[in-house]
Image 1 (spheres, rainbow, N blue to C red):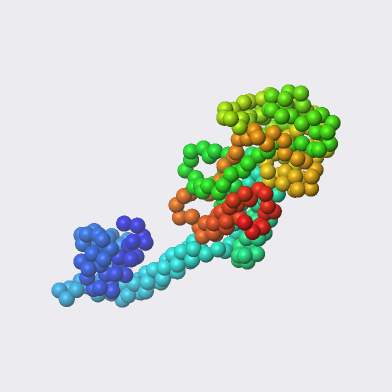
Image 2 (image 1 turned 60 degrees about the vertical axis):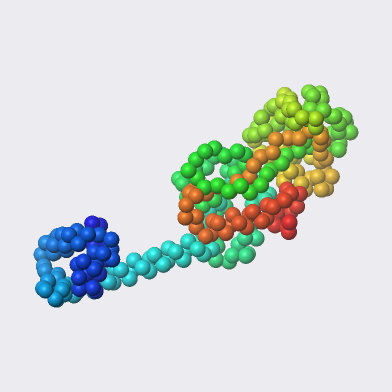
Length: 306
């Protein structure tokens, strides 16, 4: 029997004056309770209980030992209550991880809004385009793009992350506007080297079917901001997430091309260390993100009403 159960058992024997009642309350057999107390008395080298035909009562040492056992029980109850409170409330530090571009352009303003709504929360934001082990790094929740691999992690679907083909008006005026993906062979293309098939761009035709087109051009980068900057500068066409291109589309620095040919859409998930006993701060933050990323979130400023 573990020490905590032993403490509970001894206290209950004193309170009920009965081995049988105490063992029944704790769901153990009376012989087990009797053996435990005998072993405890042998370990302490002192008699804790007087046994007679009228029942069981504590000795002088047993009374002092009982008082200590009750103090331990009260501390355990306070610890349980504190854990339950922290589990259900939105407070403490929330460690969040996501990719660099999504973190800077979308998650940061959303995290600041969440902090204003929940002043007892502090947030630790980490941006990294490499895979992050949530358990090893102590991350509470990560925002991830694309299809998730099977794992023991908890996950919640938040929506989609659509992409578009973009170019600056100056580039299109100089080089012409491609009408089909096959025409990209005659164009300069800016390659984002992390996703979307690298230097092969995949499109779905309006009438159905898909095509994969090899591309090349003056810039290759694993940073979306660099690809966007080159696109705005008129150096070529680029595949960009809508949330990255949104402001540039709004100010006319880039325009969408090949709009009839859809690009693969990424899924967006919130991922957390375990699907069981999710802390209140994590579930509340994910609920908040679900509202903020409802509908075509990529077409509005982060934090704006849907």
